[in-house]
Amino acid sequence: MIWAVILGAGESKRMAEPKLLLPYGEKTMIETVIEETLDSRVDKTLVVLGFKWRKVRRIIKAYNVRIAVNLRFREGMLSSIQRGISVLPRSSRAAVIVLADQPALSARVIDVLIKAYSQRKKGLVVPVYKKKRGHPLLLDLKYRQEIGKLDPGVGLRQ
Image (cartoon, rainbow, N blue to C red; front, side, top):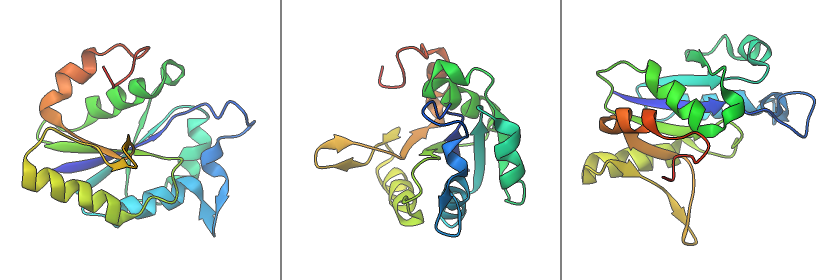
């Protein structure tokens, strides 16, 4: 089973409200990302919330997604990845790590990652654009324990 883990725990430091609730088209940013993710080939979707999580949860409760709360969200993005991966079923094969503040992401991009993972049997699939790594990325969950031990202050790049 391949999960999408949508990271939506950030503090939105330059705003009084979570930027995920800003309008994007006819929906909010987080709703747009969830809909694109649900339209992709992932089997299940998990949304990791943190900053003002109750408010965001009220907006997304109608979607067929699981929600996890990262109370350590101030420690950075890796803490949300760790929280998300820790609640996925042990039988899960991989996780597509999706940023909740990228509403222009299309289901097609997620599907390309899943296809590359399925064909090449690599443990990590990272999109590259103009020689720069980007998001989303796909992690084989055989690395679950190693990711759980990483230092949130340093991040996933280690």
